[in-house]
Amino acid sequence: MTMETWYFLAGLFLFTMVAFLLWATLSKKRVEDRLDDPDAPKSSLAKDGPGPNPVTAPRR
Image 1: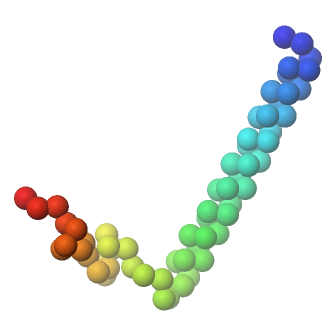
Image 2: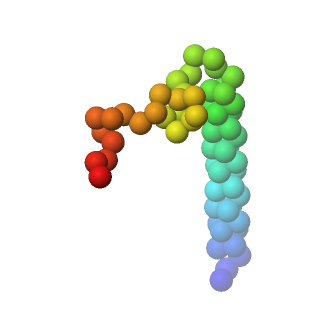
Protein backbone atom coordinates (compact mmCIF):
# COMPACT_ATOMS: atom_id res chain seq x y z
CA MET A 1 0.00 0.00 0.00
CA THR A 2 1.16 3.48 -0.71
CA MET A 3 1.44 6.28 1.78
CA GLU A 4 -1.61 8.06 0.28
CA THR A 5 -3.75 5.02 1.07
CA TRP A 6 -2.71 5.10 4.73
CA TYR A 7 -3.48 8.82 4.96
CA PHE A 8 -6.89 8.21 3.39
CA LEU A 9 -7.68 5.35 5.78
CA ALA A 10 -6.53 7.37 8.80
CA GLY A 11 -8.65 10.33 7.70
CA LEU A 12 -11.66 8.10 7.12
CA PHE A 13 -11.20 6.56 10.56
CA LEU A 14 -10.94 9.94 12.28
CA PHE A 15 -13.98 11.30 10.41
CA THR A 16 -16.02 8.23 11.38
CA MET A 17 -15.02 8.50 15.04
CA VAL A 18 -15.81 12.23 15.21
CA ALA A 19 -19.18 11.66 13.51
CA PHE A 20 -20.05 8.86 15.95
CA LEU A 21 -19.02 10.92 18.99
CA LEU A 22 -21.10 13.87 17.75
CA TRP A 23 -24.14 11.63 17.19
CA ALA A 24 -23.75 10.05 20.65
CA THR A 25 -23.42 13.45 22.35
CA LEU A 26 -26.52 14.84 20.64
CA SER A 27 -28.50 11.70 21.43
CA LYS A 28 -27.48 11.87 25.10
CA LYS A 29 -28.54 15.52 25.28
CA ARG A 30 -31.96 14.74 23.76
CA VAL A 31 -32.52 11.94 26.29
CA GLU A 32 -31.48 14.14 29.22
CA ASP A 33 -33.75 16.95 28.01
CA ARG A 34 -36.66 14.52 27.75
CA LEU A 35 -36.00 13.17 31.24
CA ASP A 36 -36.09 16.72 32.64
CA ASP A 37 -39.37 17.53 30.84
CA PRO A 38 -42.34 16.93 33.19
CA ASP A 39 -44.78 17.06 30.26
CA ALA A 40 -43.08 14.28 28.27
CA PRO A 41 -45.39 11.28 27.80
CA LYS A 42 -44.53 8.19 29.82
CA SER A 43 -43.43 5.05 28.08
CA SER A 44 -46.05 2.33 27.76
CA LEU A 45 -43.46 0.03 29.38
CA ALA A 46 -43.06 2.25 32.47
CA LYS A 47 -44.81 1.24 35.70
CA ASP A 48 -46.67 4.54 35.82
CA GLY A 49 -47.20 4.68 32.04
CA PRO A 50 -50.47 4.25 30.16
CA GLY A 51 -49.86 0.57 29.42
CA PRO A 52 -50.25 -1.18 26.08
CA ASN A 53 -53.03 -0.18 23.75
CA PRO A 54 -55.72 -2.92 23.92
CA VAL A 55 -56.68 -2.30 20.30
CA THR A 56 -53.19 -3.05 18.97
CA ALA A 57 -52.16 -5.63 21.58
CA PRO A 58 -51.59 -9.15 20.25
CA ARG A 59 -54.37 -11.63 20.94
CA ARG A 60 -53.73 -15.04 22.45
